[in-house]
Image (cartoon, rainbow, N blue to C red; front, side, top):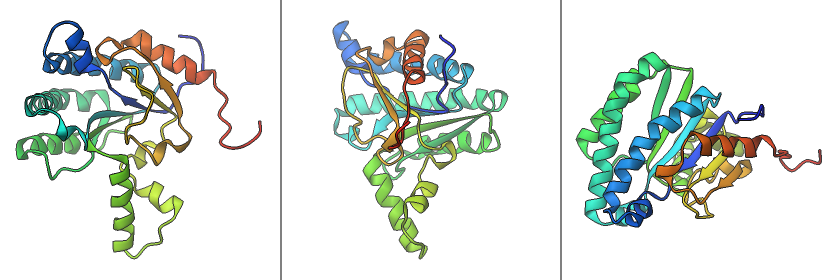
Length: 229
């Protein structure tokens, strides 16, 4: 990878697991399993090259409409991922935060999530946010209602300070795999000035080289934030 500026916070919409499997004559659940195995290597590489925070779109609030078999497999894979994550969080200095609604999640999944978050709460080297049962619009509504309930003014700053990913700052770069060109309700408020990178590569095939390409693309862009440079 060329010697370019590294984004501090990267958001990734991990899309294309089901289509990847279908192209190989497999069930969509097989694609999710392979995709979940890909998460670890991409996360490790991102932190290795200097990314401070990652926010991964694992399951949207709209994904409950998918077939029950597929949803059940996704939930099982997520639980297994968190269990595996527990053994690594302390030695790798990663702080885990799961963002999104929890009312629809199973008690055993919530228990594993709570254990991971508690064990990693003092880690500050890297931040890993997993967006689970997450929706950007729903997040803004929740934050505004929280502020009103506390009798606080609703401002740009007060909303930003109370967003789920506030500790990570706004994402410098948002990547979407799988060939679609939309944000799909992901980090809508935080991503107002994010650089966007879209690739046709399906998530199971999005490896370290593909991540380097995205970061290289970011490093070559001039970020103006509405100003003239």
